[in-house]
Amino acid sequence: MRPRLKPLDQQVIVITGASSGIGLATAKRAAKAGAAVVLAARNEEALRAVCAEINAAGGRAHAVAADVGDAQDVEKIARAAIARFGGFDTWVNDAGVGVYAELMETPRDDHERLFRTNYFGVVNGSVEAAKHLAVKPGGGAVINVGSILSDIGSPMLGAYAASKHAVKGFTDTLRMELQRHRSPVSVTLIKPSAISSPFADHARNYMDQPARVPPPVYAPEVVADAILYAAQRPVRNLTVGAGGRQMTLTAALAPSFADRLFGAVVPPLSRRKGEKPATDNLYAPSEDGRVATPHFRGRKFSVYTEAHKRPRMSLGLAALAIGVAAAWFGRKQIATAARPLLARTIGPLAMRAVRRRPIAAARYALRHPRQTLQLARALR
Image 1 (cartoon, rainbow, N blue to C red):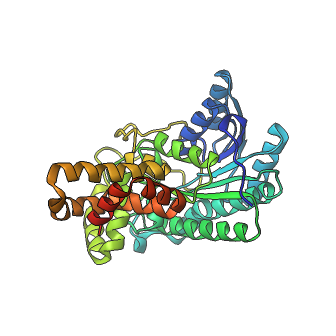
Image 2 (cartoon, rainbow, N blue to C red):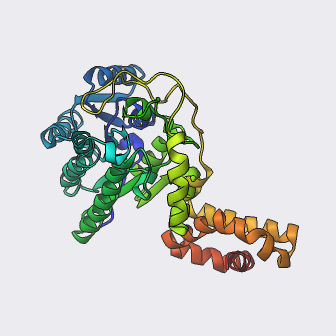
């Protein structure tokens, strides 16, 4: 049974990890669009400040202090949403923590605590949400925030990458099982690239310098837009940012080369100049209330992500690019001059569009046979 997801202005959205970064950006954007939001995090003071700001602007927000690693706390979030707004339509599992250290030097307690938040927080939230949404008329959406590190490893963030791999495995399996039981629940995995959130400042850091996320970096609002897109349209997964997608493609196509490349360049790119923060949020909440980090700006837009949201558009853009290339180079030169570039950029988008919307792709091919033939020849 397919879920009937509502427009944002008719939804109640639960967001964990809502006191900073991606969660905070999502809360503000959702409230601005008219949704009622239930915001959860460990820092009650920061949450109440965020809710006061949203309510003062005419929105509807309710704060719940909770640790998502505790199943009872997660049940408390659901009860609060039901008591305050009569239920919820979308549940976003965004809460997360990080540890910057090589795996051999990561203390076991830190590793376990990270998994308690990053993995079991997603498990607790997803299960609690699915129980309610499965019996709700029209169902709803469970949206889990993973990472491009759900697909690849990363030196200095090994424990974090492992937790995000686990989140992907759990999310994919939950989707299968809910579909098997015909539950009207959409399950989406969001996979951000590097984001200019306070994540690195909040992470526990065993390096000799302050931490950062390697560039290219995207603004938290780009991820928030992807999350709210999935709240309104059933979608399997969304990767935010072409930078991360290029890394996962490199690892898939040339794994041995990627191992050497990432092993060499990621550790130095994970450090920045300056002084290390005095505290972290691994075991207790740290200073929150910030959407972005002051150390560098993130890109405000991702063409790749927008095309990912709109497979018909990506197929049309691919065909258009082939047509332009044909006119510029001539048909014989396309194979040698344009094919490598198209295979790296337009090719994956076109193939994704075909896989996700085969009927729409077939209709496009019938209506535009010449462009489709050019596309097939160029990507052959």
